[in-house]
Length: 299
Ligand code: GLU
Image 1: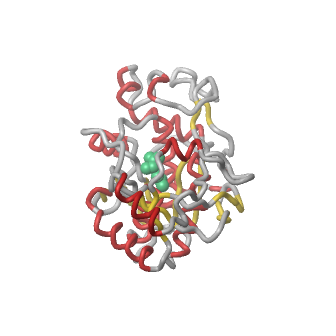
Image 2: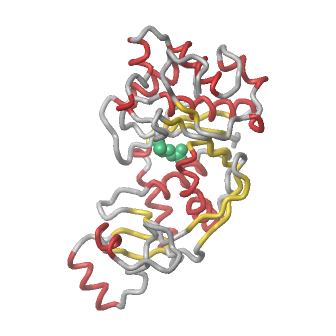
């Protein structure tokens, strides 16, 4: 299978300049290393009708092109179910009946970061299991054999993070992101994962799961986020941040693309012409502060 990079947006709304900058970077990483570039719509959760078409339109408008058909996670239920069955058969899962609130209120293990699952349902005896099954539907959790795992990231170097008994399938039957992303990347031949560095902390969980499934870890590059002028992660409420908003202010998609390239220390122009100037080692390592198109050159 040809190696590939990818962009995997959740179709929850229009892409903003932060999302677009990550997409440009993922494209540059893939194309500069002779990889295919795939687009996967992560619509298991948070999907808003119409958002996918807007996202594809905006990616195309700035020159982020992709190979083959767009893949949608909602079409891949049987694939995820087969992998969860495989893990179940190997004794690597258990049923969990905890509510979010119970998890928040449970005492966590010493030194475990906030949100780490404390293992409440890990060793239920048969009577407890039978009783809990009669009360509410179960989520499926991974029975993790480690507490932490180390990944290698092109921009962050070795990164060690927590691995807990994370959810593989939610109790409403929806496949969890951490399972779907590992299964999809492997099945699509993706061996390079470029995404926002807000996902770095989830990466040890995903790489550990991949190891259990005999999937080689991809090359990871977690790129800096775009922040608003208050230093917070950019969001739709931060004014004109989508291609549509910016076009209404008189800035066409090419101008936005050039602004994103400038923020990366790259020359303006169509993405294919920027490839020779692209050097991952020279990328800015700090978040970029978005102050609008009018504040040219400021960062
Ligand atoms: N769908 C995720 C998001 O939009 C990205 C997942 C990934 O790139 O692995 O935040």
